[in-house]
Image (cartoon, one colour):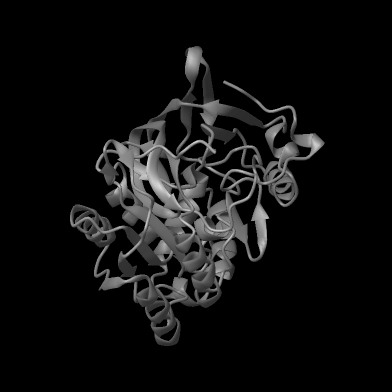
Length: 347
């Protein structure tokens, strides 16, 4: 097999990368994440100590995980394991981009989109066994990420209505820990009834001068699915993976019939969502620009980041070394396509 490329700073001997051997691990824990309990945390720590040296650190505030991960990489740690939700995981990834330190994922939040995309169980105790196996067998890969105004994202960026929903969820504070999925559904209904997102239209500018005007809701995917509703993945484009460029789905209407049709399609293959008369889908997108009238809300990996006038998004191949459990013939984050998925929009 072709060797995995080695990022700058990776250990080498005579110009040849040394086989990956994890002996030094930092575990980043968000102690208030939805699925983090004392029992689960003790189990994870005990198992990780079997790898060698283990340092355990806790996040204390927003953005802290980025600092902790970057410091671990500077010390030459082999892998940073994150026991937290997708928001903290995103922060840690931003601290590791371009380093030789690998990111390893354990589900600690309520939805755990990225961990489940990688094929991990949604329980941190069960997932720890798979992660240890992956570390022992050196299943690390360089994967691509999206970048929005300088911040990296692992699985998606949400613009417009989607971000308005996330904003409502985050306003609920501690309730998010105990009522994740019901709260998301309630927030979606409330945002729709109160016309959130409809007051903030924007344009999506793609390659070769293509402009999508009067957009109200866009999803920029770095991998599939978009998210999960309970145990059900919401599929937009099964062919978008951590090994491909980005894909973009844009809605020009938030009418009930449009939202119901798009949502219903994502519970299956996403084909009708990509070809709906009120949507525009483009695949293999390397860069795009979103322009507000005057501003619009956005979120990355489920973390609300506020309103901006312009959002510049691009794909960064090979940005992050990732521990990939259960390697298969399919790239990480992929879902086998059906014959309905052959006709994909391309920019």
